[in-house]
Amino acid sequence: MFNIYDYVQVNSNFFFANEFSKDFSGKKYSAKISLKQLNENNIQYLLEDIAFGDEHNALYLKTNKGCFFLFHISDLDDNKTTIEMLKNNSTTTPTYLFSNVDYFNYGRFGFAENGKITRFLSANSEAETEEDIVTWIGKPHKFEYETHTFYTKQKLIDCEMFFDSDIVCEMIEFYLPFVGEEIDILEAKIFSNNKNIKTHTKSVLTNKKFYEKFNKSKYKDAINHLIDNHAPYFSTLILVKKNGNVTLTNRMICAYEEITPTAKILFSNRQENINILKTSKEEFYNLLLNFVYDYKNAEVTTLAEASKKLPLAIYDQNHYLMQLIGKFENYYLKPILSYDTGRFYDKATDEYQNKNRKLVDFGSKITKKHIFNLYSKIIENTNSL
Image 1: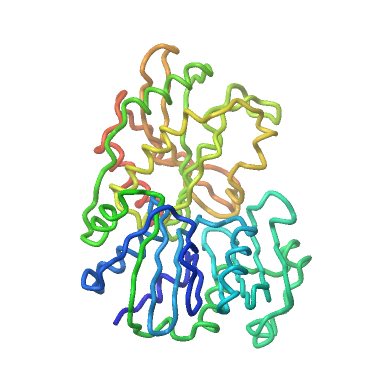
Image 2 (image 1 turned 180 degrees about the horizontal axis):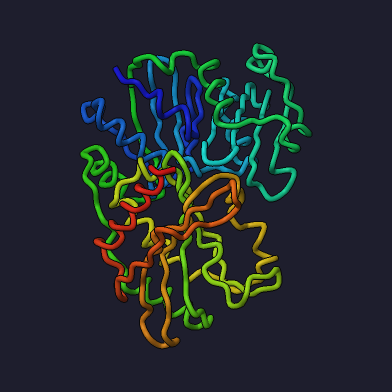
């Protein structure tokens, strides 16, 4: 008997049906999980890894109440993809979708039967185009009638109404009232694009933390790409918000001149949202390494061209702005690395406060010790918000 309530509420992304087609996940590899391996503790490790892990795996759970297919919180954010998944699976059984995060206004609900969408409603405050901010298909469904919550597309676009994590969580309890109860897991299977999925799953179930081996070749390629683009410095931004919500982004790696709409910047589309309180220091180390390797993908553009892809809602709440920084003394030397302990943004005054800000240098190598210190400082900052 297990309780998975916490993992199908806030920051969840899952489908529910009586059954799922064999190719539903769209992942290349799969592995069965022996039920003897599961207990109350390690199923929590497994569910956390599915929701927030770097592998972006998917988990199929057949229970005595129905079947769950859980995905990483940032997977399947293309509504067209999820709509097709709903329609295709609903040819044999009615299928639900619930998806939400709590670090910006984002929620999705979908229901399909007989191969057709009955209802699909999504709102995304960080979308770039109006058609992606709100997706509206079908008529109000049972929850909306029951609660007399009649959304209109225009009110959602104008922020006169909100369809967010709070609403989606209420919908989950309405449509799946058993989620807060103990349930029997009858079958478990994990899907991945990692061919070593069995090894990964074993490490998760035993709570064995592992470090990604530092890849000198990838690091060299990233640094050489920065040098080729004459970057005087580079930076990964770390936005620390309340409740442990953290955004890492390479969407403005450096600026070549004073910030104006026409200013040249070095830009990459890499961005990830995590909950630092649910992320181990080993996982954070691995994630940050991959942000550094991502500098190889950076392109020179203007701030105006990149602005639509920059993190939105930065200034909508108090937060800390932290950074991993590298500086070149000249374009042919190894960069000197440091981390910024954080500037506090006070929404009331619309200003950054530098009172406790420090730049901690740690030489030309990325070391676990210094990344762990950065990790601890992030947690300290999020706990003070």
